[in-house]
Length: 286
Length: 325
Image 1: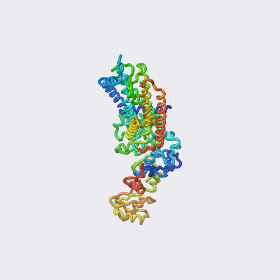
Image 2: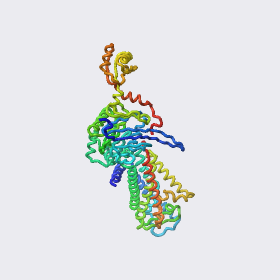
Image 3: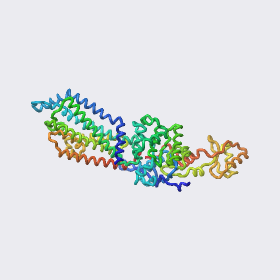
Image 4: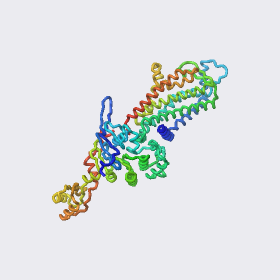
């Protein structure tokens, strides 16, 4: 156990020392600032226009708040930006080290390949958690500071496969829902990290590892958007990675969420086991 | 003390490696190392020689568990590398091809990481090793600003933490300036003589091996073609070199009068080479002087290991496709 902690400590030292580790945090900070500015000027008017086209709005119109901004900004950030950062970090951790020769230097030490991969995966999971909650905190904080808080109204078209109408979550429930969404999204990111490690175990360069991982992820995401392939959805890992969106339904579908978590756990075990097996059998020739 | 009476520290038994490349269902097999057996004894400074593509790096990688052998086994201090990997690797400090580091971290941090993977060492031990390889004062600089020589020294420092019994080094003086080469050679000798370490040294530099090592092995196209004590090989293969006027006539005279195997070198290295045997240099010298030759030098053959190596190996610019992974 102390060996695994030591491995984690050294992986953390390496991760923390790399400048590129901190780039995603800076990018996310900049993206959130732009989102706040854009919502301030344009998005709320656009949303009002859409709502007025479908509903007759009466009473206090406090749905244009920080929670609304957060929920709607999470889609592009969690579905596109974070997977890119996670795939790059995973690629650098194994294939990048193979490319540099440092993996070779680690493997001639008395440490098992399995421990090395699992240590990297554990740290990647912490990194994914940090990225998810960092951006969530920025979005919620920036949103509330700029637009206040209140009940969360979401357009179903964005979260419920094109269904019409809107969902409403009372203000008191929103922080819990967002926390849950963050946890589910983080779990999804760890599955992507395991996939990236699996691909890293097969290739020798970091670029090849993250390009292949992202190609696979976006290819599956594209397949998922084709209505003719809806029979395939339940089998795609991406479907379950996106399950965090259901945290913004009026009634939380815990059953579906749990099924997705089980699916994600299965994908995680398969990807990680395959990564460990391939890595243990692999000849390090570079 | 003979080799057989000493404790074997690194044993390669019938080691083979066949790389298989499959493309469209058609397999292509490339044999990098074939049935290689050799033993490195405790206290040896063992030179591992071979032309480019002979399979030296593949052998080193198999000895360190980076490449899985197709057949055979590796024993380090009695531990089978395949079955007791961690126990075996605890005895070893090594670098293959070139030492690799995290360039964005300091030299000291790199040493902490690599030593940490072997169980960790005290800060004082890191200080001592840095002092020994001459990197004190620069240990807090990022490795990315280190010169090639400094990286090589840091590589050796990493190998020494925590103190191993066996060092496996691939071209440790590669790319160093003459001062660096001298320092590394002195360090290796001191590690063996003063610290009781065993060194398995892969090198292209025959003079380096000749001056440093007590035992050598030569690999050619994945097969071991020569292995033994350097002193025995020298006795068997090192002749005399004679600088004399009229070399062809001198060689004929020595063959006839002294019964030695002598042959004249063609220009530009004009002279006579006398094959190893029981020839007494004083007798040869007297015979030549009596016959009126002007002898400028009569000495043990220089570069005998180079000659032996070139005689036993095929010189090629590029290795055959099958010789390297």
